[in-house]
Each structure stands twice: as structure tokens, then as C-alpha cells.
Amino acid sequence: MFKASLRAMRRTTYYDAVPQMQDQWPIKKALTLSDVDITHPFLTLSRQQVETHILVYMSPEQREILRAESQVGINAQDDDTGELYVMKLKWRGSYYNLIGKWGKVVRGKGLDVGQEIKLCWYNGCLHFSVPQQQMIDVIPQPPIRMPVVPMEQDHWPIKKMLTSSDVDPNHPFLPLPRKSVEDHILVHWLPQEREKLRKEEQVSINARDYETGDVHPMKLRWRGNYYNLMGKWGNIIRQKGLGAGQEIRIRWLNNCLYFSVPEEGDLQRAASSGHDIWPVKKVLTLSDVDTNHPFLTLPGKPVEDHILFYWSVQAREQLRNDRQFGIDARDDDTGEVYVMKLKWRGSYYNLVGKWGKIIREKRLQVGREIKVRWENGYLVFSVTQ
Image (cartoon, rainbow, N blue to C red):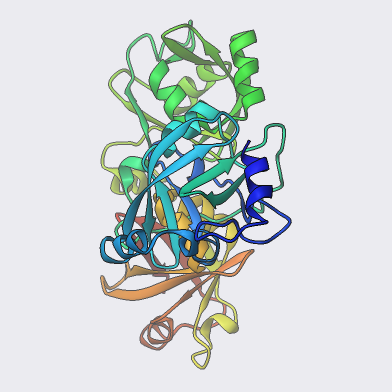
């Protein structure tokens, strides 16, 4: 019906006419992690595509509302099912967000990273389609940051106070509430993985200890109203010396279950126990201390594992879109705070802004070691004398 109408409209000129092109879907996008995150449901669309293929076909009244209020209510139709959703298109400067019932769409269609969504504007309505069995390669994207301090509560969406049965090495398994697992873990899985869990009632996964970096082969087993994490849980209990009353925090990221059991006193206690509180270290090179072109180069993986990991999904998305973001950097040796920018360069990152001033004030030289960590919304650094 929709395709036939499109063919008919190509022979007629209207205000709402579909662009004269062979492809009836002018906007296409591979879904990213932030696009399918139901804890903060929104679909990010590029400004150029929205303004070229959507706004130009809206009524003058709709465009005026969008200009004045930075958002406008629209109808969005799922062309795969025919279902209609009341949504909002929100202007974010260099991009637009589709919000409203997007979380319902993600859950209803079982959307996952790598699937392609196609969109077009037709007859006063935004139409979209996500063909099944179609996955495309997604280039790994770094996370990003909004102009606010990253939200720590989003970093660990699942938290649980350990009970005596949770830390019993004779019957080693960790029960997790069904809703938490389905909202914050299974939502990131491929449909095939979720179907396997439903049929076999358990799936093998990797679990990574955030404090040590150790990876444990585990199984997630469905038990009706809850899920059990089992396999190497007994080893984790013994290695970390877990006891009743400690809090375990869990999240799913990069196809792995991350867990953390923070000690009381955080960094101070970690330091006194011999735990290294500086996960990113680097020996300064000639280019790092060049005041004529001042920037500090940091390797991509350590930055993503130990800095961007703490940022909210929206924060990481903004970094990916703009390829840089303003942050505060604190010198742990002096307490001084600098306004800086973290710039994404693909396989590495540059810290720019006041780096030249830091070089001069600390008299940095080739061969000295700089240590970096993320703490309470600051990039903290230290250069051992």
C-alpha cells in the first residue's frame, strides 16, 4: 500500500511529496549502543539528513514549533507492522533525537546494535523500517559525553547487596532479579542469543572483574522470576574474599558482563591495600612535551576502558558525533584544575587545551611518566617527580 502510494506520488507534485529518488528510504542508519539503550531511549539522526529529507516536507507550522520549542510532536509508523506511535523530534544542535515511544519500539522489535533502520517522511508521517535478518558491520565507536558531569548511576545499572547464600562457595551462584537482567543485560543481546536463552534456559557469557581485569567464563541461567550467574562464581568469591553485606555492581558493555565490588574508602583504601589506582600510564615522548604543538596522546583502549567507561551513554554519543568534548582535568600533585578537551583520533585520543601550560608549569620532559584516571567527573593526572 505504502509502496504503491509512493509510485503514484512520483507522478504528482505535492507539498508532502516524497523526494524524487529511486531509493524510497533516503535516511539509513546502523543502530549504535546508545540507539538501543532502553534506559535512555532515543534515536539519534544526523542534522543534514533530517533537514534534507524530513523538515523540508513538514508544514510551516511544524517547522515553526520546532524552531521555537526545539521539539515537535509527530506520528511515526512502523512499516513492518503498520503500528503507529506518537513521538517527538527534538533538535540537539548538530543532530536530532527521535524520542517518545522509542523505548517501546526497541523492545517491541527486539532492536540490537548493527541492525539498519530506514526512514522517510510521507503524507505527514515519519515512516520507518528495520528489515529482519539484516545486520551490517558497525565500526567500533567510542562513548560520549553531554555538557554535564557523567551520570554515575547509569554506569552500574544493576546493584545488589550480597547475602550469605550469594557468597556460599559450596553452592556458588549469584541470583539477579529478572527485570534488572532483562532491562539492562538481555536488551543488548542479539535476538538469536535471547532465543537460545529462552529455549535452553542458560547461555555462556564472559564476565570481567572491573577491579582486576580478570575475565571469567560464566553462564547466565534463567530461573523464572530471576537469573543465576554461575560457573566461576565460586572462584570469584574466594579470590575477592566476598562477604555478606558487600555491594556488587553490574553492567553489560562490549558483549561482556562487567562486575565491580568496591571496597569502602574507595581510592584511599585501594591505595593502602596496594591496588593500583592509576589504570592509565604513559612515558612522555618528544611530541607530548612540545609546547609549540601542545597535546598529550593517549592510547585508545586504556582511555575507553578506564575513562569513557564511566561516562553516560549520551556523553559518549556526543564525543563520537563531535569528535571532541570539554572536560575538567585536575593535577593530583598540586590540586589545580584545567579546562581541557579530549579529542578522538580513531585509535588514540589527544588531551588538548591547557596542556602547553601544564608542560611549562611542571617542566615536563621526555621519559617522565604521567599517570591518569577518571574520578568524580574529573580527569585526574599525576607526574612523578
